[in-house]
Image (cartoon, rainbow, N blue to C red; front, top):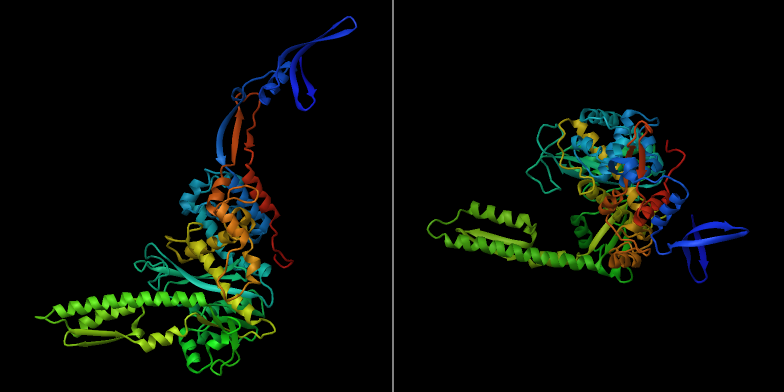
Length: 578
């Protein structure tokens, strides 16, 4: 018997089970069954049986010992190796490097405490891929101490790879709350997490002009933002070995005092912005007038108050409208609260409220909304009188939507538009903070007791963000991210609010790519990649075959496309990257 495939003109070929024999000089055929509509796997099984193979059920030969999520591990480790991050951490493979790489990968996949990390990475292929299945939490802390000793060397390599003479470096500071009070770094201070009930640490992140993280420094929780700047300048000049760099920081960090200190380093330029008080003084002196924006939304001016600096005045009508709306809401809310205090004081006829008591209530109300400059108050005889300061409000209205970017860089190196774009690039560092703090990497809450362990934890999170930053860029066609945003930043109107590209709007509206694949967030895409599993099988007849067999499930179309994008993404390198 045999299986015969017979062409059938414009129809699918006929698949027939036949037997064949000879009668004299003639060959005879008999069709035993028409298998054309049979499932292909059944046809193949019959073919093998006819050919004399012994067929057995798969479960009779192999048993699946364990099935572990693998695709997300494969994607993250692929990215780490293509970036050469493992070689940047240590040029030669060692136990500590494998543990650090595993902690970085685990943080991108799903962040856990160090103890939970040792549990979870055994429930994926991560521990097996890096041969760290036997690691315990004490060994992880030892690897973190090893990593901290190499931090400067690693940051220097990243700087050589991503920063060059004359480039811009973005820098900003944030803070994260701490659980407990045993660490010498933690203090109560201004909480960006809105957790005034918890002490905190402060950390500053430096990135290249595209927001790619380069270095991080951890400070005591009471450290003011400007106090961190000298360390960064010293790092740029001494450790990174750069004599020419443009330092970009926000106006709360690059204060007048810090700018005067920067002027002592001729090779270090800077870009920042003026505070509102300085803008009001310029407007009062007639240097800022609305006629500057008759033809365009930015104009370059100079002022004797800022010698040797270029000032770029920007006007954003949408920002002006938003500020007017917000101010009116705050004024109305403040009036409502003051009226409540006034009625409360008026009711106290037998025992009038003391002046100090009323003043404290009024101060709390106008201070919380920063409306003190827009109200006049009078407390007399246990009574409160208040009114809006219309002149103050009108003066502020005239500056709505106006901000001023300042720089030491000459026009030949940075045009007015490029100066504004560089300052607004600080949003890339803010994105880093959102990723570090948010659902992706979760730098907080922090429980570590030793200062060096806290520093190592923060640095580990930064390296994880370095990996995620590149993965997001590579996987952008499958994410809700705007793929054209990076290129558009260099060309679009520097003052007007950013607009999503047509392709991004289309992708978000359809929730599918042009290839018909579902669009994901980074988190859900990582989760989908994890459904690609590695099955560890063993033969039931151990005496016959003594080895285990690994079988990886075939990738879905979405998984296939994700790995293609990760393989194609260009990795920025240079000969000095080490």
